[in-house]
Image (cartoon, rainbow, N blue to C red):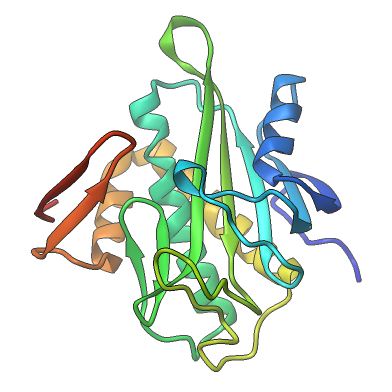
Length: 223
């Protein structure tokens, strides 16, 4: 099978197995890997999600991490998590037309039918002048399987009764949609990204719980 067709400025680094695509991407970024480098693996042995949670990573799903060098402050770089969520949602909508109930869940999940079908993990290191030296955008998309014991109920394309795309096709679609959105983010700022994400978000106006590293907050999701 030919390798995934990525945007012209992207460079693919493919692996059969890695501990974590994010860890491999960070290693390459520290060695000077260019923006647009994509680390893609068929499986991970030490995949992780937000707050260090284990991320089950058997073959058949998508595991990829993209290196960016946005040359901006951390609060602006964090906006790229919303860009990634939009790209995942649009890729799934394109590849799996019968997949219903796609939505974004703050801060970094994509849902299908109210269950988690994809997660996003942003990790960065700082450079000079308090700006971000590099940002790694990691995505995990459940195409053929989902962990049965996840803290937040999970699902997959197959679990939703739809034929799954290949990981190669999923990576191609994600990269294409991400590239389009990131160029718009650079040209127009966060406004269009925020509006598009809000239009797909769950729990607006509802009581929510936000778990941080050192506290759990309760409140109404307003904006």
